[in-house]
Image (cartoon, one colour):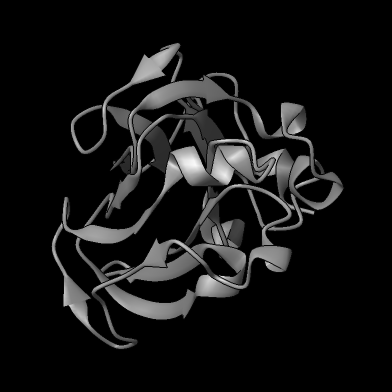
Length: 167
């Protein structure tokens, strides 16, 4: 698993630090505290979760849309520098059949940082028993020295750095 890529401090030596903006505003939660066994052990890679009331999820960087999965309430995007990222809203959403998930994007589409990736009806999801949590994980972190989650308790979408990648 790639959970060992998750850092608690910047590495002593690195070539480049790449800041990744938050896709939603909310309270930061380490993946180990998310109520999903695959996410806590890093099966989807290192990252961070956000407890949020936001219904709109934005792109943390300029990217290409790789996959949109309404049943999983998730999207996968790839940056111009090769980073593949999965952004998922809620847990255990398969039984909802993609209801209240809207994305204006198509697979292969180029998008700018801050562009809307998808929206959900967060109030409706909460009524369905789905926790309002957004999880961002890095799918191809093997080439990185490590990933440092922000030390901020709360972040704002598109403006605050959520993760810093070290090469």
